[in-house]
Amino acid sequence: MADVTIEPSWLIEATYAPDAAETRVPFRARHLVRLAELKAAGVLIEAGAFADVSASVMIVRAPDEAAALEIARGDIYMANGVWVEVRARPFGRVSVGSD
Image (cartoon, rainbow, N blue to C red; front, side, top):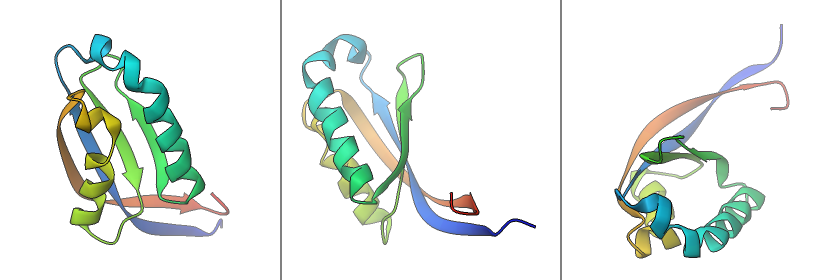
């Protein structure tokens, strides 16, 4: 049987403003660079947006809810009104083998 572990992490859901498809354009490159930096630092596990541009999701390693929210609130999308709300929930990420 494969080595299976549950990694404690946080799922962040960021709600987009109604006009986010347009307003995010000038900030998108910097947003993606930051995600790459968080990934390289081992903080970001996964990220992506829903196709209808209603919200995006990030799974992050953080010691607590406040730290997880600080990751989201530090994003250029939040600072410029592309995201209008963020929430964090404890998440148990299933890891198989060297995943």
